[in-house]
Length: 134
Image (tube, rainbow, N blue to C red; front, side, top):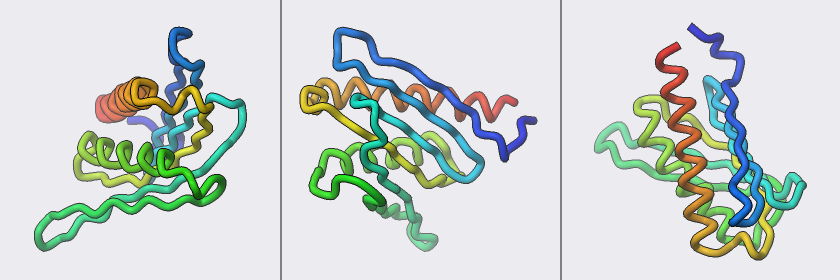
């Protein structure tokens, strides 16, 4: 079994037909770190968490900007979508998410959002499956 203190990492780069985007996912025993970079900068750090009501099982998603742009709702949408989908993949674990994101203006369209989100979710799912089998 892998050491839970050591993160499992996957990095990728979106193809040149879109805005060049560097993607990074690190799966720790107690959280998930995701990096999305189009600018070569740290950008904004967003924390996202899921709270599950023990009585009825309803989930509440909490998104908070820790550092960076607070006037950009798209960054919160990225975090909300990621925590919601990751909590469904990682059943029973409920790891909080830390998102580092910096986007160019031309990388903010719906197609880029969907492409980036799908690739990140594929990467997260691969790491979750990898840790379950090791």
